[in-house]
Image (cartoon, rainbow, N blue to C red; front, side, top):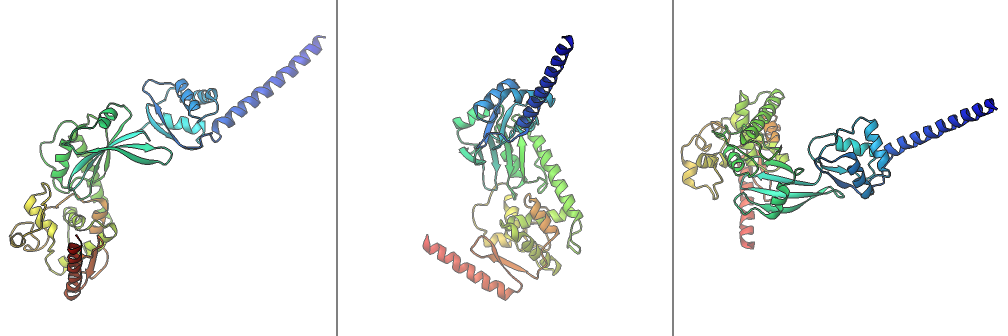
Length: 384
């Protein structure tokens, strides 16, 4: 009898092991299998939350099939204590394993609300934007200038811990414009004693936190620009008409201010380099304008003939060679165009009416392009 009991107990134990093994195997498959989400969602994890609350929220959103398996997966993967606060994008069909990786990885929130402070050449503005997780497109909910009344939408998101803040610097903004705009940024603190040297700040998008020091932001921009010019200088073409990275930066700033069409930058750079190589004056309006404004704002009108004739260090209609400093902060593409220009014989260019330019090798060809541009200007004036 005892032998039968022992045999039955052993059989039952084996069956239990098989069942437990099957359950564990099923749980592992469920944990790593494609999830039930049919549309991406933005999961907000509050500060001080835990995996129990997160799993309940995910089940309510239809993102997981089993809160218990989700929590056990966090335990067995050693991530149960690594939950991060923030707003996280959970993709369509994300597995429980993938979701746990998203909410424990750290870093900036990947969805939700962001405040973008855009520093432009003509003006600066705040944009409050919310990500639609289904389309992954941002929807602008508020826009306002630094000197305008702060809207309620900004006040609301300003107080939320998971709101992302970015400062986006436009290519071609001057150092004075950038510092002036940062001083007006409500979420930044402190100041800088001196305006950084022209051309030394990298136009880009920078993640911020409310309370960050302006001086720290400037340091990041300077480091990024220094790295860009160093890398481009190492990869430069041969036989360029300048001997130092600083001179290349001056050329890059001129290229930046002369065209907003990305694919034109190497051709524009080739025009000025060809002129330097042939001993011709650069004759570029943006340098003259910089000599008038010193980079402090925009001129807001056309150049006068007296200004084109005036002898200033930045009037390239009068001086030979390049001006003494950059005239703006060029982006990486303009820097690389200045150091790897297109191989052309162009010596002239003028607007072509499409937003780009018509290039020419001879003065005769250039004069025809100028005449065509004057016709376009006249037609537009008549239609206004």
